[in-house]
Length: 204
Image 1 (cartoon, rainbow, N blue to C red):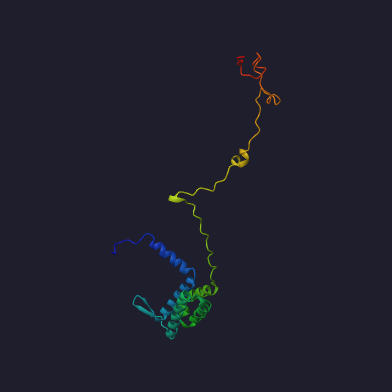
Image 2: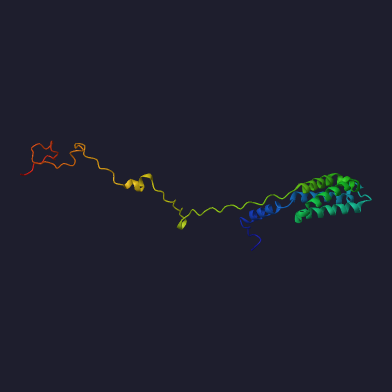
């Protein structure tokens, strides 16, 4: 695979979703704030501010103590990421180290590291794991063979029920009464209308 070959389209999305799932199971932002708070606390006592030709040394007599506090805050931040069961201890320790850094490390790294460590420690103490996700129901397969949607179960229409096919009573012809329906037709007369014939006379 050459360096010019583009990444798979879904690879970045898959990595991002994996990172989000990993981040959601631990106090991620609390650890990040605690680590960022330790950096200025450890850096400023050993830094020199250059203003033109004037060099201002910000080192204090407690430079070693500032370095220890900063390193401990960074370690506590990583502990919050990878050892989430110690979040309460790590959060309380971060708050105490932030308070100690005020007299030791240039007002807690000029209040920058102090505020970051305090916020991160408070977030670590207050963080709690969320409820486990509920298992989702697997949808039933609604496709038939060849990808075609499966037919819905057959439901008989009201007129297709067995009672519909029962023999209904036959109605007599409009020109016949109910009493004359069972009597034999007399075809010997000359009037086709009165005896119910169809207009043809018998031969005899």
